[in-house]
Amino acid sequence: MPGFIKQESIDEVSNRTDIVSVIGEYVQLTQKGNDWWGCCPFHHEKTPSFSVSADKKFYYCFGCHAKGTVFKFIQEMENVSFSEAVEILAKKCGIQVEYSSSGREEYKKDPAVQLKAEYTELYTRIASSFHYMLMETDAGKFARDYITSRGLTEETLKKFKLGYSPADRTWLKKFLKGKNYSEEFLANSGLFSKRYPDISFFNDRLMFPIFNKNGEVVALGGRFLRGDPSKSPKYLNSTDLIQYKKGSTLYAYNFAKQAIHENRKVIFCEGYMDCIAYHQCGLTYAVAPLGTALTEDQIGLVKNYVKDGSVLLSFDSDGAGLAATKRAILMCRQQDLTVKVIKLTGGKDPAEIMLKYGPDVLTNEVNSAILDNDFLLSVLTATYSKNSPDEKLKAAREFFTYIDALQSDIQKNACLEQFSRTYEVSLEAIKNDYLNRNQIEQKKKVSLPSDQNVNEEKIRMTAETAAVLSVIDDDIKYYKKLRSEITVDDISDPQAKKIFIILEECSRSENFSVSTILNHCDQSQLQEMIIKSMHEDPANKEVKVNDSIKMLKRNVLKRQNDELQVQICRLERSPLPEDKAQLMELISRRMEISSRLEDLKKRD
Image 1 (cartoon, rainbow, N blue to C red):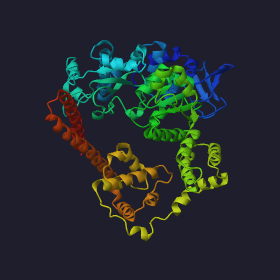
Image 2: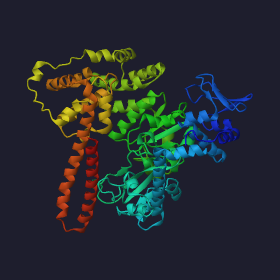
Image 3: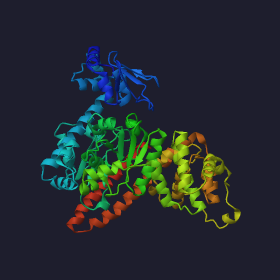
Image 4: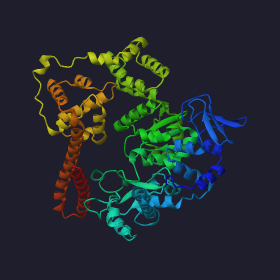
């Protein structure tokens, strides 16, 4: 409740808070004379210049000049408001914070704040109900048997408050209506279909409550357990809500943050089960992105605590996992963080290793993590031959992207030396190619030789091709916007798909520009299309890009809808009971897609 805490409460918290003890949870401090010293959490340093005075209740860094009270420190470290910092410290001291009456009234008048609290309370109540269903009912027994067969203990189930959502898709609405929640409130909760408001989004799934950093349930994830896996997504996750922003939240951060502070390291892993397995094995500094690629906001949550430690990446070893690992390496290195990669050898994921071999083996896998440069070079040597000059060049250009992300010239030089030894090329040659990489790109010819143009197949301008062409610009932001909402698999037109892939390749290079994109095209007609698209009115660029993305998203949903309709028509004619059950699931999925199409239509 920002700004409304009584001064008396603030003074009491300040007087009863030991600043050395609080900061000591984040920074390793050593007493010298009357003050305490450690390495500054706000900038990278190896020689301690960060001092904390217990008498003055003040901290100061002689390196970056960061300074303030214990409230300011918590604000900076936890990325919270002043009032939230007071509340955090009051909780540590066992103090009940008091608010001014006028402030309390003003708080009540803020509909956004009040609504956020009400939806948080709703999700907390639902998580408790689902947890009871899992732990205490016959209906949830099969889900309980499944999760315990994966090696999770009862203590872990209770800690993470795992649950089970009933198979009856109308149960949740009836339950909440019985608790006097209004139709309008529930309709905007993210728990029900927009088109069919009595149908719950989650049913017959193992449920994973998603907590905010204060340990409050703000969203849900559900895992598919039985039935035809090809007919239902493995995981369903809450979308962004008033109380929950997916890209700014890390799963299990509320449990992990203290261990991250103490160990000066964090494990970013693939999903719920991986994260929980690490925690059960005592590796409690593990967190996971929530059904999306790792974001800068998520890295920002832990950045201050691991500046002098390391980020450990534990993503799947398949193509998508490898791409996620490479992307995370670059993002972390751009923020000057040391990165290591956990290469699991005892099983396909942490949960399987925990189940088969126990905590010690998984801990050993983590302790054997390799530096990111060694990992990337191992991937490159498995992809590009050391015996081919062309392959060496391809490997070098891919490795240059990593070099660009490094913040130290010493690191860059050392990694170039490592590449030269690995691929047996002279250090001088690799350095020259790295320093001249932009000029080399510019020298490439834009158009193909005329004899190659003669036999080119004519390119047809489809709606999808026009949509992908709309994001081409010297500014990469338009392509990033497209990529954040559309994948290459969402595009059906082969030519549009090809352009998307070209843009993805160019996005990995330092010089994302129209010239670079043209250089990657092997068809003159396609080059002409790109050039023509660049001559359109730039004032409407943003609008056109947004419209293109909406159109592509609609196409994806319409294709899925049509496919489901064909399957529904086939099953409606079947007398078999098992087909009837499958029919209900398909109808439910089609309702969800229809709801999403309706949402897109409203935005238009």
